[in-house]
Image 1 (tube, one colour):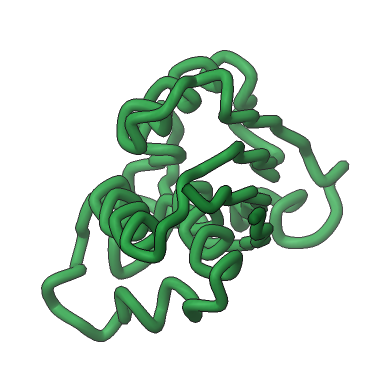
Image 2 (cartoon, helix red, strand yellow):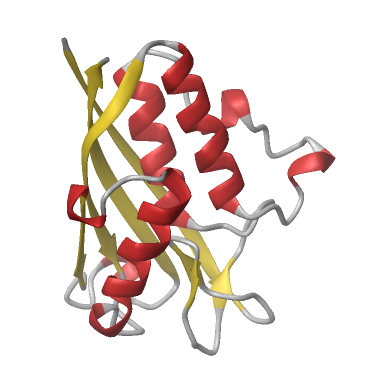
Length: 158
């Protein structure tokens, strides 16, 4: 049996923060603001995984008012989510994601992001697609105030 889930996340860009997407630090003058490392891409994947099995969302499992998640590496949360999925008898069939950022350009970092996610999930990199789009200078992403990401995950019953 297959189950599909979709996820979305958005974080404001802020001074004195690292820009981390898919577990990869990307050189930029600003980073994403959040309780954890604010990795919007990884958060979107987590929400997609949880949504596929109707298990709530990232805030349900990793609340932003819990001090133990302050500045946590989101790849740890991703691994914890994968363990939850495995407990339900499912594995990842494939992941398809899109990063929305006016700046910086993501294309040079996509191979590293795919490798980082594949390593964290212990799956073949060919099962992970990462794309990037600008917002053509529209909305908060297009005005370089935020970065967002969306993801679709297909799970397969073992």
